[in-house]
Length: 259
Image 1: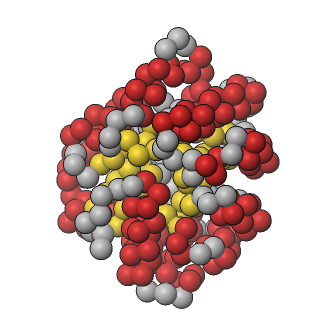
Image 2: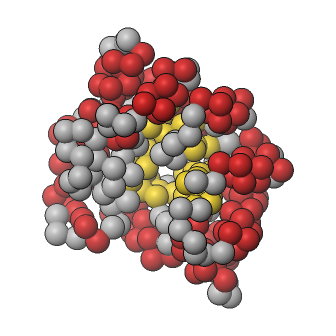
């Protein structure tokens, strides 16, 4: 049973120097599938290119809330829909709300979050949700648009057990990455302890959020064993059981081919 990285950004310029070498090395470290998440129009197009070059790379396409002004131009949604319909694109996203920054305007973020949720509904694919400092609005929009009908993942889950319960009750999975290893990651550790194993997905958000002992360095899928080990420790189970369960979870939600 191999590890699936359900959220990475290998289109990022920080991989320009060694992207092919790194990606081709993953299979030797038990990383079997990577889902590359497009987050801008360039990122979406580059994600398509990665899925075409590497058999084990799948993709999601969406526009991150910080970049939704790119969707204000003509034909942006037509292109996004066309790319999202490709066979190796398994989800719409990442999309959502990010109130950490003052721009773009929150109403514009909400408008395009809603439109991308509707796109996922239209093409019958799950969604990958980004939510930062926007807990109430994210949940309100997802409930009002019945996001449980599309399903998907709350990527890089960063809230407490109360919100975890809300999303789990909607049928969503929670993406768990390097933050689970941080000394100040108590809230996330409580969530992992609370939630059922059959709703956890492993992710890196590469090149961001490297786990201990590599915190602060460029992240990659090679760091996922540290995340799996911490989950196993919290839930008092074997690492093998974590890998097996998260493999099954990823295949289920994203309809990935099983080994």
